[in-house]
Length: 343
Image (cartoon, rainbow, N blue to C red; front, side, top):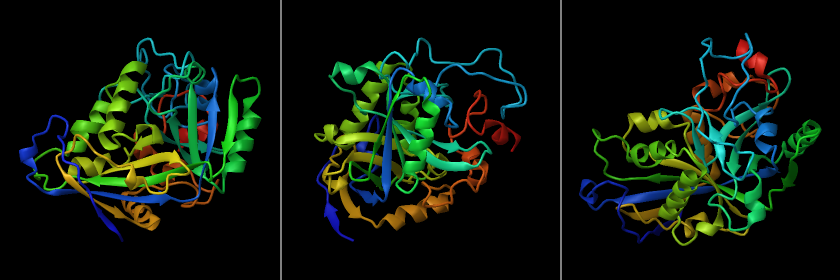
């Protein structure tokens, strides 16, 4: 595996360089194989997707007796004030965090079920473009990019078009030669055991505190600039892996995992990695895709239908109930909801 020495030395957000000495960080990466994509855009895009996926993508909900997981009926749902993601390309609404609901430009992991509550496919829903655009046409409507295994993309596309009916949305399919996904993880070296993992304090927690589209956009730009300085326009979408938050809380040196979407002509994501804000020089190591797949299995989660047979398993058999915002407990009607609630 080739090792490419890094040459960046900067300051981690609000963290003293002296804490880490002169150790080297590590950036490991691999292409995520056989990915294809569907773009959904238009004024009804949030509502349309909200009826198909397990996560809540609109601030309000419809709760019916015996059809949700949460047995408690809240008096009023907590929502992001003045957030209406049908009125512009504002990002994705995320239902739950320690800081309450928030708005994000980063992806959210969820699943799509059939009418029997079996998992057709998992997916990451990315607001796109990640750091916005000066083009008023792009900013006019909410726009989402959904990532799937290429083997299931035709089935998903047919399902989406069948459910479209009168919804004001456009649905576009992109093959695996249009965009490219990458897995990456960033290790911070020499972290004391009694220190909270810096990724929680400096990245994940701040990412849940953005309560407006403007705050979400500014935060996304700062994160992308911190990691890919000078190459921000080449990053199409970004998912901050939240399914490993338990490991991050238990291990101060556990790496932050990313899923990165770029244009297809990007041949090596490490050439875009240019961190400013991290007090390390970095080594860059290319890994085989199986390295990240093994890491996911060890952490207890899957990635696309290459890891399971579609429409054979309930989502809770794959730990969806243990993943933040993968399945809403209070959300109203969506395909497969009642079976999920009963489970």
